[in-house]
Image (cartoon, rainbow, N blue to C red; front, side, top):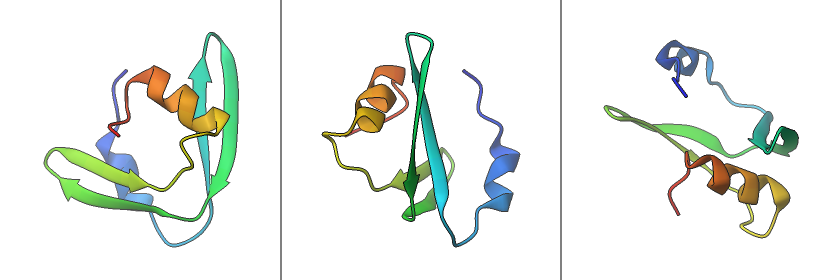
Length: 66
């Protein structure tokens, strides 16, 4: 999955819908803690409870490091 780095230009303070996909099933939740922490490599930090379905889906997508 390719990530478009230009999207990071539009990050601002607010509420975010964090969405994830597993076995053709989408999941989403609202988060207010999202920030870019590195430009190279592009890295963002997100605060989620590990016990949520969203967190499990994100771990399955292998985009998340715990």
